[in-house]
Structure formats: C-alpha cells, structure tokens
Length: 577
Ligand code: ARG
Image (cartoon, rainbow, N blue to C red; front, side, top):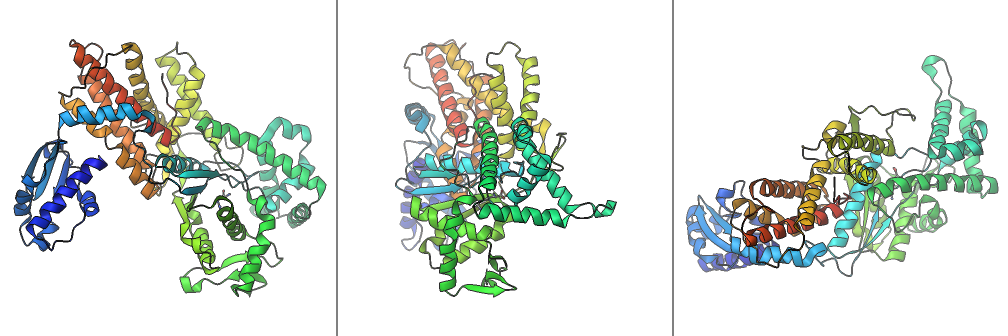
C-alpha cells in the first residue's frame, strides 16, 4: 500500500501545484493525509481537501472536483469527488495481478523492508529480579520487548536483545540469611525457584513484622541481611557460591517461560555485571562537577529540568539503580555501537529513565538522544483465581499454566483426536494471554479476564490461531494447485486482498510508535476478512477450476500474511487447532 499511496501522492502534489504554484505540499504530507474511509462505498482511500482550501483559495468541493482527473494509475479503478473528499477505489485487476503475486513471491519477507539496514538496535527487556517473583507485571516488558525486537529486525535493523537480570542487590543478603535459617540444599533442589521465592517472602515478612497484630519488625534480621550482602560484595566465597546457585536456578525457570513464548536473548548480562564498571562513571560525574552531596548521599541535581535529583551513591557509598543503568549504557554503546537503545519497563519507571537519560546528556555523551524508554500500563487480574503462594502477586508461569489447562479442556471437547494436543494447547493457551495483552495500546492499564482471553469466538488469540489453522487445512486438502492466474470477482476477495496489502504500512507504524498492538489489531482485520471470504466464497468446492485455484492461492496469501504477523508478536503458528 505504501507504494500505491506514494504514487497517488506524487500525482496529487503535481496537480495541486498546477492549481497554485505557490502551494507548499510534499509527497510525505500527502501520504500522511490519505485516509482509509470508514465505509467501502466511499472507496479504499480518501484524500480530504479541506486543509488545502486556504492556500488554494477555493472551496474543498471545488478542489476535489479539480483534482479528480489528476489521479491516474494502474492500481486505481475509479476516483470520485464527494463532499470535499477525493474517494479512490483500487482496481481488482491490480490486486489480482500485482498484490497477490507479490505476497506469494515474497513469502516470509512480505511486509518487511530494509530501512533499518546497517543500524544497530539494542533492546533491554524482560529483566526479572532474581529471587523475587517473575510476576504478571513482567508480561508487558517481556512480550512488548520481544515484539519490538522482531519488528525492528523485520524492517532491517540488526538487533541485540538483553535480559538485564536483576541479579544483584540487598535481596541476596536476605535470601542468603533466609536460606541458612529455614532452607536446605535438598529443599531448594526440590522446590526450585518457588522455594527461593517462598524463602524471600518469608524473610521479608519477618523483617516487616505485623505491628497491627503485635508482631514487631525484626531490625536485627534486616541488619544481618545487609551484612551478608556486604560480604557478598566483598567476594566472600561461600556467599558467592550461593548467589551463583540462586541465579542459575532462577534462570532455568525463566527459560521455561521464554521457551513457551518462543523468546531468546543474545545476552543475560545482569546488574551484577556492571559492578566494576560503575566507579569510572561516578568519577566522571565527580570530575565534571555534577555530583552534589546531599545528606551524605551523592546526587545529580535536576531541578533545572523539573525533576527530583538522580541518586548516584547512598550515604554508605553503595551504588544505586540509576548508577548501574548509566554504567550499563556506556558499556553497551562501546560494545554494541548501538544507533538506538530501547528500554521496555512499566510506566512506574518513567521518572527513573527520564532522570538518568538526562544525567547521561549532562555528562556530555553525545548519544544521549539514542536512548529510548518504552513504558507500558499496569496489569491486573480478575476472575481467574490463582493460587498466590507469594502473597498478592500472580506469577507469570501460573497464569500461563492456567490458560494451558483451560485450553486443554476446551480442545478435548472440540477435537478429542488431535495429534500433538499438548503442544498445541500450550501454543494456544500462552498465545491467548499474549494476544489479549497486546490487543490494547501499551499505555492502557489492562485487567485480565481469563474467560475473554480464552474464548474461541471473540477477538482473541485462539480465534486467530484457529483461523490460521483453517487456512493451513484448506491448503493441505487442496494438494497441488496449477499455476492459474488470480481472479478477483467477489467483494469478499477484494476486501481480503485490500486488507492484506496494508501489512507493510502497519509494520512501519508499529516500529515508529513502538506499538505491537497495531500488529495484533491488523491480525484481527485479516482474520475477519479471511473468515468472511471462507464462509461466502466456495474454495475447494468451487466448480470452475480457475476460480478454485485462484481462491486456494488467496488462502495461501492470507496464511502468509497472518503467519508473518504472528511472528512479530510472539504468537505461535498453529497448523492445527
Ligand atoms: N529489573 C527491573 C525490574 O524488574 C527492570 C530493569 C529494566 N531495565 C533497566 N535497564 N533498568 O523492575
């Protein structure tokens, strides 16, 4: 669609200049002005003439009438001037002879482009905190982050995905103390990460106490935890060994979740990796006169930018979250030579990123404007009763497990003889959660309603995966198909191809706005268009051989575009459901 829009825009720019040579309008402006009319009767693209009224000193209706004859293209069947709009209808012949063959020919690459070629994007996402629960709050960073990675790759960027594990900090002091007090090697081997989280929750509760019910806070335990963390920082061998062990147990567990999602990372360099890289940056800050001492702590004053100060060192000299992020950014710039570094976290961290991005700028690093924070809204859950071993948070793996369990039950009823049932149930269950989550714009707060996410007939993951499987089944039943020309004669066929050809444009917009939900909603459009075509136009049972072959190839085109779009949002391609 981008190419058609561009050609139309070129002609419109020339025509507008023909009316008034002084008109300042360029092709990109016109491309941006072209709209998709809400109703197919108004054509496939519309150009509103209202804004031109002033420069051209004519009424919009007159402008539309004057521009009507200017647009001539093989892709266009007709152009009409209606109430100040230019309504443009694409030609079925063009869709059949150009668009569909292009989709079939490009296959996996359809919708991709190469404007990112030669540029490196580093993405920091998922990044759970070891020993603390990997909960549904991390769903956003994990799936938005990975989608952004896929999207950037699809438009040509080299990408490097980093899981910046929260593998350092006072929580390890607590965990070490709790482990020695209440845990054992056997219990941790047996219980894995659940045991670690249980120990962590237990010591936190003990430290906090329950003053309302007469249980006082345990300051001694807090102090002991700090001391153990300090020992760890000083390289105490026993503590180091425990720490390494805790991290590896956690990683093993995360890997299971990542596998369910089809996610891999290029690096797991977590916070601990940067401990020895911070002093140099702190020194740089000091040399530049940017550090101020405030109540014993070292801070960077950001009042000129209407932000609270950025904390660099605590009173006891220990480093903080922003300190580590600054050191990590410098390391990543040097190591990966990024052109853009994307950080995906919940919107609660907006201030943190705004602060340290500003500090990087103040330090004189010229690449400060290549740092991008991509925030997202909060996630809550209602309806689904999940056992929350950990108090009031819901673990991501439990959410997935529940979805898989429910899908398994639905599938047993629908299709009891399905081969590889458990693999498919996993793809559909996890897909349902991902799809539901990515349907809304990322800043919107999400409230999970499990029944809605899992429904096979709403605008859901199961529904689109089922549609994909339906297309696969048509193709496998069709067998060998003669290389007949595509014919588009029905409204359903035409509407389907018009939807498919918007894919590239949706990809570009999703990259520009860091918004995977554009792809999710595009998938829904394709699924709706394909299902309408499927129900109203006989495919395998079409009497005419050419029509049959043409419709099978339309099915192949729909399957290709759906599959390419699934890949961009961590949705598995299910050949059977
Ligand atoms: N571990 C952090 C958390 O879960 C997220 C880390 C985000 N990345 C970063 N470079 N700060 O809250």
